[in-house]
Image 1: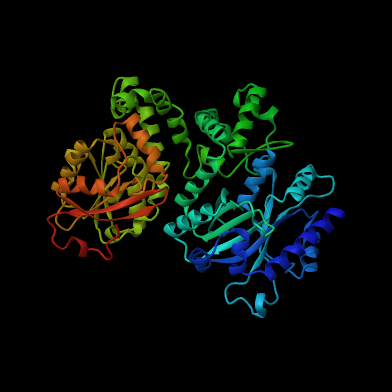
Image 2: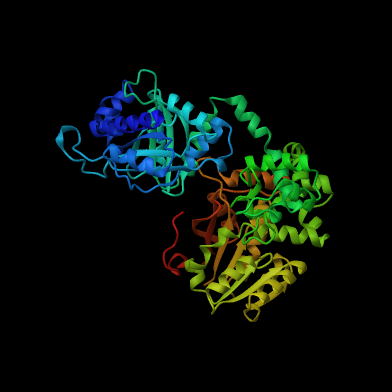
Amino acid sequence: MTTTIEDTARLRATADFVREHDTATLLPLLLPGLEGPELRALADHCRFAHAALLVFPPDDETLRAQLAACALDPEARLQPSVVVRGRLARRHRLDEATLEVAIAHPAVPGPRPGGTEDEEAPRTVEVFVLTVPPGSDLAHLAAHEREHQHEAHLAFEVRRPDALLLRGLCALLTRHGAAPDGGGYTPHEDATVLYFTAPAGSTAGYRRIELHAHGAHHAVLADHLREEDDAHPAETLLRRLTGAWTTQALATGARMGLPDALDTRAATPLDTLAPALGAHPRALATLLGYLAMAGVVTQHPDGYRLTETGTLLRADADGSMRPLALMYGGPFYRSFGALEHSVRTGEPAFDHLFGEHHFEHFARDPELADLFDRSMAASSRMFDPLPAHPAVTGARTVVDVAGGNGELLERLLTADPGLHGVLLERPHAVEAARRRLDAKGLGPRCSYVTGDFADVPADADLYLLSRVLHDWEDERCVEILRHLARAMPAHADLLVVERLLPEDGSPSLATAWDLHMLCNTGGRERRADHYARLLAEAGLRLLGHTPLPLEAAVLHVRRADTADGAERTSGAEPG
């Protein structure tokens, strides 16, 4: 009961603090020395939104009583708290799955400083809730958190956030002594949070500051977290050095059929799982412990369960990423072991290791070729927005050049019953695509061409080139694009799907894939202006590009000699 009374007192004090302070008076208390134009700039772009604390009620009824006792809404809606759950798990070395942390934002009623109501959204108390029944194993965690108040903070909502503004605000905070202290993206709120430790000399009574920005700002968040990591360089480096272990743990689990043998609802005991997989019980437990840390499984007293992330490694899962795990943990894992050869010579390590280019190597091994095509299809979520692209909606015939097993073509044909598709590929891929599209009932609207880039069919309305150019050096890319330019009639569109290297050098999947292409194909990822130069050399023109899921982009291209190219479809994309 004493701890419940203590939590209620803290909750009441937090509500009183929110009621008594405003943005302009609070910022100088947090950041000593902040004044003049800098204070006005920060106050103009941010507003004091809430104060936060973490409480540990024994049950939901007690939480409602605590909120009511502090004149806060006892029925305030609770949602999962992803960021704080992760912080607690790391701090106390626990599996995230064992912690159910919720978050509520009850409004704080009453007049604001000066006797007026806030004209903007009401201020709130951000209440993080971890239920700790009497006798729970989490009692020690609750005691530690009550003593140290790690999650207590003051939050400022950023008005009309964008990357430039957020970077400027972060720089302003650090210039006045605030240190990066974690953060994350909260999907339930579609919000990015950036935490800072208040500088020495702060008199606000809170040690942490939060910038709260609506939307996903992944590049800014990555830079912010990297700045935090710099404070612990040895630990950061050690975690990164063990990345290869994660690749092999995931690939090994997928090869053994571990995800297929687990359920997401009921736990499977180790003594049932080990003989079913033909595994040594203790060794399997070690692997499962690592996979739990990687978020693929969760451990329970009666066994192991598969997480939502882990289901993507099932062989029969919709959008299964099992082929990627097998590819990255197999041939590509071996070639990355020879990365130094690529860096010293500029030649693909894959060629050095296997004695031939990876496309030739895969073509001679039907099983490996099939695995590669399925691994490419595993990232097909990036294609989701393409059926609505203006260039697609106006087409009657589409040619998918090097279209793999027909995943992209299937999406376009399914979305538009009046569209006819042509797939150009190698013989084994054509047969795989034919089986796939026939099974979907799309066979009557498909044609197939077995050949190379020189065999691109002419006179279509739309041409697709998805994740092809990054496989090749510039000279070969221009050659491929010239084949397309010769085949395309004046009215045709070309859509090129690739990952683009960021203009500002910020972290991205494209940066990782750039190293992958160097090591395995001799190709590269490129910036948009680099692609524009290659297209121009081939007689084509880049009209614009738009983002796709999985940090991909679609480049909209026309023949350069088409005078009215930008006007032929509705709304050319911004660059």
